[in-house]
Structures are given as structure tokens and as C-alpha cells.
Length: 137
Length: 114
Image (cartoon, rainbow over all chains, first blue to last red; front, side):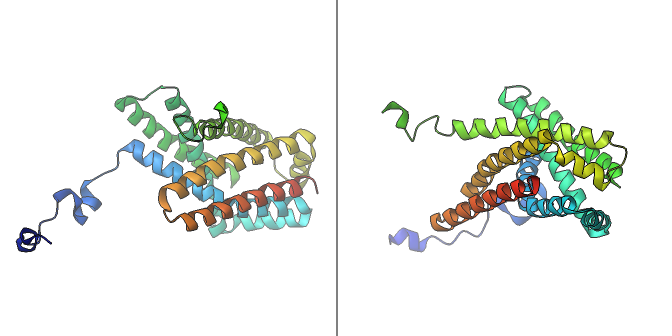
């Protein structure tokens, strides 16, 4: 090891924007970034949850008694809440996906429009979730 | 062999395009199913069973599931490529994902044509 490297004191000061405080409170993801990561997260969640959804579809189509059991099961608070999360995940993945199809066609790629459409996606998926939640129960 | 180039600028195009096409297929199916369910007065077992007894609905649902399988494969593989760096672990997870997807499709066929 070169002599100079040994004599150089260890740097104590961290770069400002990599401090924990900066990561938690100062560096913020812009809205299109939130839409993007939620698109990924909702997709992964739906992929895993499909096992549960297929199980419910299977039961609900097997007999009238099983259908009524599933209907009762879907009414239980934790199940209802989980289903509502999945409804949101589907709506978000759907709305954000449509936005990406337009982005692929070079529509709405400028900063102002892409931020506006990101807000629309977030609002529309929440509104749709509320609507389906109200319709289902 | 010109068509056997496995690297270069366009080798991801097929997956990219497939993901978009399957997305549109699933979106159309979703809108139709939501419309059918919203226009039904109340969803009893009879209504539910009759819906899935129709040939078009069975085929459409299978088409949806096959689209989902391809779409999810591209998506989950992207996630694994981004976050899982060790090759062995990534390959295992990718194989596991393929098995799960195959299981989903098989189960769907079993549910639809029992």
C-alpha cells in the first residue's frame, strides 16, 4: 500500500444526500416514480395472490353450498380487506398499464403531462377501488 | 443464419411486445366481465354457474389465463433480473415461477372444464 494512503485520515463526513435523514425525508420519488414502483408491486402481489383467487373460483363453482361458503368467507372483515387491497392492485395495474401503453406511443412523455397523468392514475385506481368495494358489499 | 442472433439491439422486443399484447387482451376481458357482473341483478350460484357454463366464457377465461401466464412471466422475470443477482438463486426462482405459472394454467383448465 502506498505511504500516502496510510497517512490520509479516514473521511468522517458523509456526502450530504446519502445521509439517512436525506434518504428518509429529503429525497422524494416524483409521482411517476410512485406509479412505476406501485405498478411493479401490485403486479407481484397479484401474481402471488392468484393462488388464493383461483382457490376461491374453484370452490365457488364446485357446488351451491361451497358457493355460499365462499360468499360468507368473502364477507369476513380480514378477507374483505385483503380482497379490497387486491381490487386496488388490479385497478392500479390496469390504469398504470394504460398510461404505459400511451407512453410507448410517445403520448404524454413531457414532464408536466406525465406528472398529471400519474396523479390521474393514482386517483382513478382509488376511485375504482371505492366503486367496486361499494358494489361488492 | 441471420435469424439466430441472440444478442444485439432487438432481442428483448418479442417479450416487450408480448407483454403489451397480453395486457390489452386481459384489459378487454376485464371490462367485459365487469360489465356482465354489474348488469346482473344479483349474483347467485345459478347466475355464477351459468356464466361459466357458456362456451365463450370458458374460452375467454382460458385466453385470459394464458395471457396472464405470458404477461406474468415477463414481469416476474424482470423483477428477478433486477433484484436477484446470484445466478443460481435467480435460476431457481425463475424455474419456480415457471412451475407456478404452469400450475395456474392447469388449475384454470381443471376449474373451467370439470
